[in-house]
Image 1 (cartoon, rainbow, N blue to C red):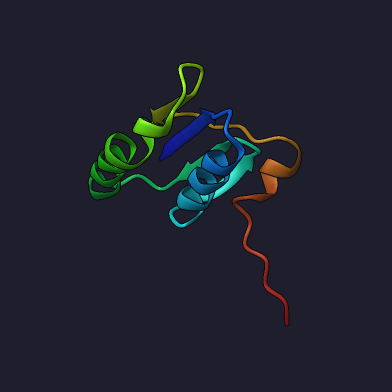
Image 2 (spheres, rainbow, N blue to C red):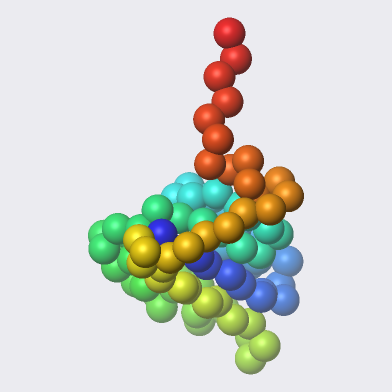
Amino acid sequence: MLLITYDISDDKLRTRFAKYLSKYGHRLQYSVFEIDNSQRFLNTLSYDLKNKFEKEFSETDSVLVIKLNPNCDIKRYGYAKNENNTLIIV
């Protein structure tokens, strides 16, 4: 799993980056996304960050990509604890 967090000051760029990440995973918090990890996505993300987004970043903008291994012990509280549950409506 990848945890991607960002701090982007420009509203339009921040919105565009959030929409980009929404295609691949889901939002945990306002500027934190959880994405199932694959080497292919990681390569795509690295390419897009360098070639599409980074040139528009200001000196204060940052994106952090955290690669979690399968042995990580993840505890969820609050709304986040429901993210792993599947909801079935009949």
